[in-house]
Length: 114
Image (cartoon, rainbow, N blue to C red):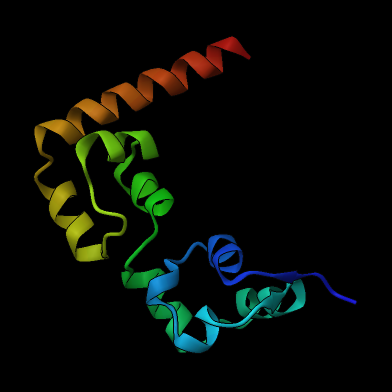
């Protein structure tokens, strides 16, 4: 019998923001086999979510080149879509420049520590 995953866990494994997923996905459990199938043959809704968002915090942080903690320090909302991220990248506000520098410094220190 296959292990089932809660919707929030399944969404995290797919890198999507759960509240933006279809109701059927949000309200049911999922098996690892179902997740594999979604990864291999993503339906239109999944393709669109991955392309335009909204994206979960970890994906937003990755796209901005900062940490999730940096998002929290900046008071950024839980999720952002591709257009909102694009605006920030096109004309980075001071907090984003600072957080990118901080994040790069941490990554460099981690790499040197290994």
